[in-house]
Image (cartoon, rainbow, N blue to C red; front, top):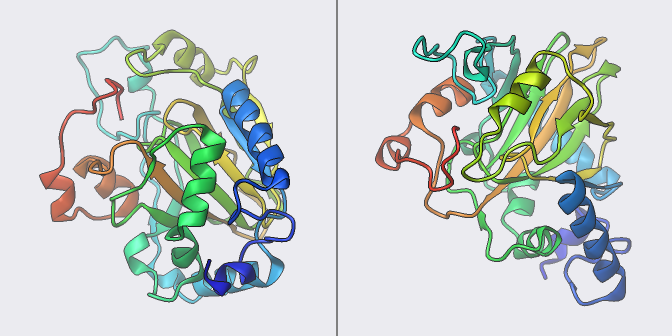
Length: 283
């Protein structure tokens, strides 16, 4: 293990470099159960305060490079309508979006977050908690560990992720709002469950759960199978998150449409690898 990891993760409380130790084994079992039941698990104060300060600083120095978007999208991250579908189909429900990303290719070589994402310790810990092996770091050069920025009045509507799993880390909490809401395991490979998705989009909250993250918390999340959103950010402070992403297919990246809409540009890799998803789900 590199000594730098000790300055980022609270290894005394969460010794992720030793997955066989009793403390981590107990934590892994807790995360497994929560992920199975709720598609989400949270580990408080995972990142050390000094590392949080460094992450916040490296982001704020590059805020001018953040790609902000106000384009309305549907739950499948598309902005284009499909008139061939029924008017009430969830793919035709377009919602207000205002957020941005510091793309992964903007990170400096010695970035705190980039370093953490590229450690095997974090990858192996995530894999153990998900009870899935192997998982891979996302090959998408723009989205693999991007910072998500939501300024005051920012909102991220109901959607599914393109990647299977994310490790959201709260960097800066807004004064009010910016609450993460989700509907566990609402779809699965080969089964979109459009009727239940439509209910949520129309305001049904019986299966909606809330998660109030604090700076330094780590959230492990099955975002491709779980409908989720972030409520409007209120007050004067922005909401900063980092979203390290993991996938089942080491070759897969975002579609060109998603890359353009969410990250502001398309790279050759997005065109070269633009093929139908093997899980049969809409992006």
